[in-house]
Amino acid sequence: MTYHWNFASVFDNWWALAIGLAGTLKLFVVCLVFGMTLGLFVALGRRSHRRWLRWLSTFFVEFFRNTPVLVQILWFYYALPILAPIEISPFMAAILGISLNSAAYAAEIYRGGIQSIEPGQWEAARAIGMTGAQTLRRIVLPQAIRRIIPALTNRGVEIFKMSTLASVVAYVELMQQGKLIASLNFNPLEVYTVIAAIFLIILYPIVRVTYAVERRLARSD
Image (cartoon, rainbow, N blue to C red; front, side, top):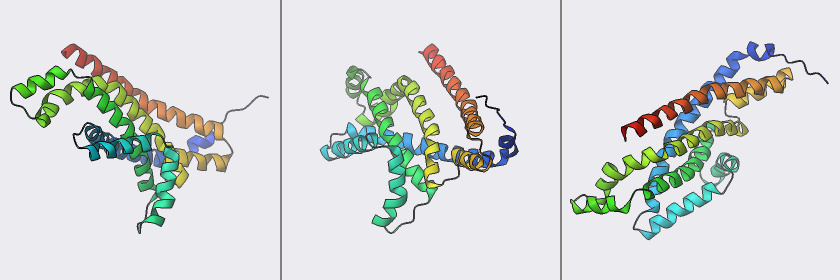
């Protein structure tokens, strides 16, 4: 059977995709900043001398890393308002689900980067009178970040792609708008092909820039 591709109806509804793309980018930026920042604090918590903080951080990582992010988004949207007297919008439910899930993975990336720094550097910093926090901020973290840039880039790409899961709670993003166009024009292949192309056009340059940063840092070393 020969399939006749017809992208005309997709391009006629470019404005709907543009609205969805704006929602996707907004969700991506918020989840990227929140997830990566929280992940760093969770990683530091897992290295804390306080046992309760280590246990709490470990529980956070294992819970959000071993449960589906789709279930997390649905739970925050439908179950949290039942347990607490608060209203959760689709946007907030998506932020909570994607950000907390990403923070759990980012925490392990940060922790691995910090642990890769030679113990002698901690001892040398302590010998010249630096506190643990100063050593972490001035010596350890700058080196660790350089080593984990590829892993953090992959995490950022995953966050961007996970934004499509927000469509399950009717948040207006690219996939949600694509479903709407496909249901009206009965052309899911064309719609999702265009959406895949949009993701590629946005993500590929970001990845290339990251490669350039890696090479520059390697030369500076």
